[in-house]
Length: 117
Length: 166
Image (cartoon, rainbow over all chains, first blue to last red; front, top):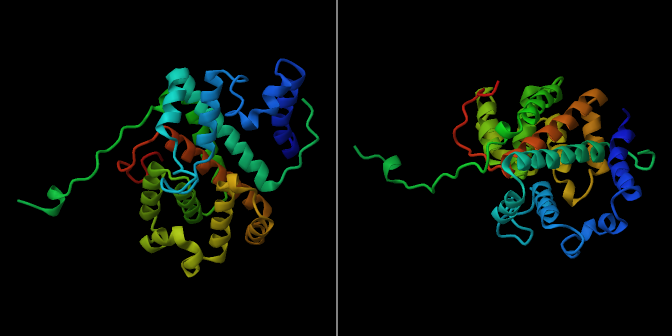
């Protein structure tokens, strides 16, 4: 599988979702999910918050505005309310895997646009 | 008998949030395979520096415990480990090739501040031929993944013994 194909698989998932079950709004507003309360379930919101916390490990210290890296107790605990422990372990695995693909693709600047679902 | 160690009270040690390897054994095994694939063709000394620097930036305490102990056991110097978080001011502790790798490690680790700059990538490409560079990028990605599991499940540092998982 080529480098381009790997990145485009992610875009393709979004495009498949667009053309099938997922609504335009839920994809377009994902970048502002905190402000779009009616579009995502509590469980989805817990997963999105965890995704952000696990992705942004590098920010500042606990005394800087961006927070202290780490994964805050409140974010983890909210996720643990909505996901059983085994499911949560797999969710953490998923978040870690897409973070891995992100690094492999961004490092080599793989061009988007050629992916077919 | 009274020693200083007996009178110092440290903060209470926290427990891990979950045993993720127990709940996701296939993911854990895949990570171990990925790790051994990524380090092939890389200098082990350089690989430990990469792992320590990424773990510093991602604040993975367990990973720091592990990789500093492994590095020391493999003969790395205390000075080079201590200076690593200020490597830009202590460049003479490291080779130009190591510096290029450390700089790339930072760029790939801090993606949320934006991209991997051309100058950083190009400098790495000057010191690593393409296959070795591909392995280095993979190695940086793998330690970033371990860091995410370590931080998210809050693995407890302090009990690692060098070579424990080898």
